[in-house]
Amino acid sequence: MSEQTTKTMTTAAPAVGTATPGEVKVVKAKKKKAVKQVPRGNAYIQASYNNTIITITDPNGAALGWCSSGSTGFKGPKKATPYAASVVVKELMNKIVDYGVKEVNVFIKGIGGGRESAIRALHINGLNVLTITDMTPIPHNGCRPPKRRRV
Image (cartoon, rainbow, N blue to C red; front, top):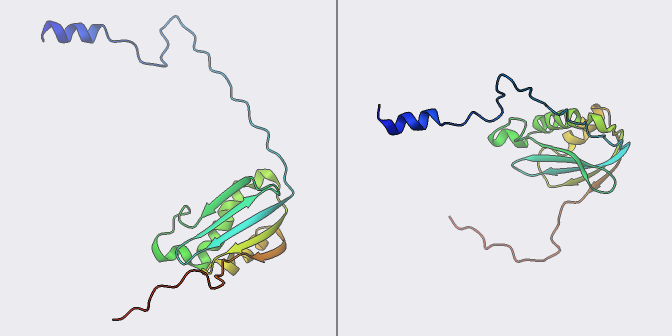
């Protein structure tokens, strides 16, 4: 070995986070964040042809938790199925169990396959559905549609 490599090996600093034999390492305990109780919330279901996304918020609109069929492990065309929507609701209920949500107002947007099954799954998983509002955007003769396809 050359002198230069020997010097760099001997002057190396100790690894970060390691204590020398005479030192005592002090670790601070993290304080758990107090979780607010939200008995009534809003559930937003966005059901497209490709995916189903569900978000549960408090009455002010702050998100408590969200889940999508892509994040639960479904790939490709299976993401827009009714079964995927029910699995998404089950996963979301596991995330927000600490908030104590009992009742929800449901707002649906989109025309995908997971619309009705997501509402049924919300009811089956212990949430009382108070209202169902369809917020699907409908054009009132706004933009001109693309011209017809010729094959």
